[in-house]
Length: 592
Image (cartoon, rainbow, N blue to C red; front, side):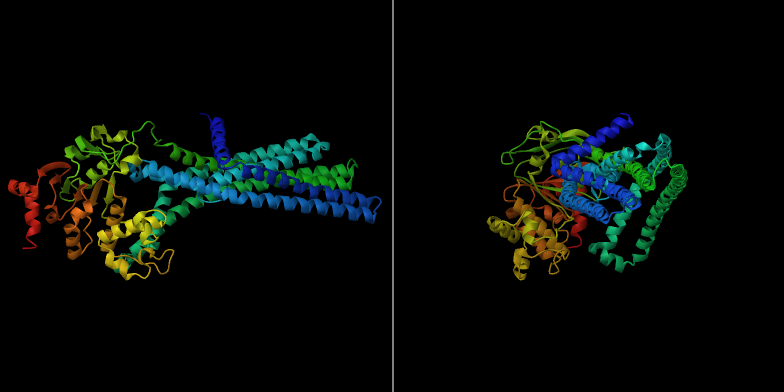
């Protein structure tokens, strides 16, 4: 695809996206552009008429009439311009928000693996620039197109006025502007090239800024005296960004100096020519004033057109990144749905997994069956592959080789949302939202009909006493981001909240990934004692380092170095005297 076809393609994509959002604001901004293009002619024609009247009959009534009509036209144009702008601005904002939501939805649809890939993260960072602000991306390009339309309409009017002059003047103007366009375009290309190379550094800067402003890092920063180190790292990143921006601005400085010099030469030649025409009496003083004003505005409009085009070309690169991001990992059609109430077994068959762009297997030849209604423990040393196994089961990762089957069908054949509905998962790293406890459990808007279910889930998870101690109960907001009276839960309370969230979802398969890691011994015992109630005859998968918690499980799968090395009940594995028995004895010695 050559550059012209690509520009047409991207332009069509922008305007089709805007039209789908709503055609009204395109109409409003078109009318805004037309009224804007008319405004300069008031200041071109009115002085000519006034000077002609002053140099001929000089009638006061005619002078007042010219001023009055001009003021009326000017007021009407300004009022229409402001009206159309006021109508269109909210539409632009809502359009940008819609594109932001589409970007987020696309991120949710992407393969989970891609969210950990640095190239995808850089592309995502560049794509976000297309919807980040009014001065970038879609909104900027649309407005610049309409500004271009306004300037073109004005240029056509200027051309009609200047048609009486020598055609040489027009040729000179376009020649100088062509040179300016070339220089400015090369500067914009240089700008885009360096910004693309800078995207990973900008992502690091954003990450470091988040660390400096995130409350969760505040204790470590103070206790470990991290401030100097973080400041040093942040300054290094910022210095690199500033260095690149300085290179870009030096290029723009050269471009602007070139433009200023060529425009000055151009104006000197044209103004000299106009004065010559007055001396030889081929044009009147009033015409000279009109031509002066028109030529200056023509040069200004043509120059602005060049800037707009180069700015649009630069923004096209950003929108191209947005479209590329949106077009990757398209949603596959003809996926199967499933009924979560009638699922049976999940089977891993000779499953291998390695990370993208890696040659090392994280999991090798994994074969096992997760039977409906069973309680299964996943244990093993750190880095043995337990978490990767869970991510494959959840279809967050895709297998490198082999397959995972749900009731005989490859899990890749199922619609992701319907497959995810099978699982209630509690990860060790619990994320709470700056909303009410109720909303953090139900993950939806407040609904009085769900109150009993929310309360039941909270009580079963062991948060009853905490909720009763709060003046607003389940309506209490978490964190102080939006509510100064918001509370911050302890690590154990967050874990219980996550368990309540999983209970509320009421999925047929429960996965607990170190759910008691942050709990005190009494709370841990409470969770273990009520595990059968929590699981509620569901299939339960329990990932743990604390082997004392595996006694209640029907089967224990032991991982080591990416493979399953043992499988059986607690008593069976102790009798085999293998890795599990060794790990169990090592932990038991601290409690005997």
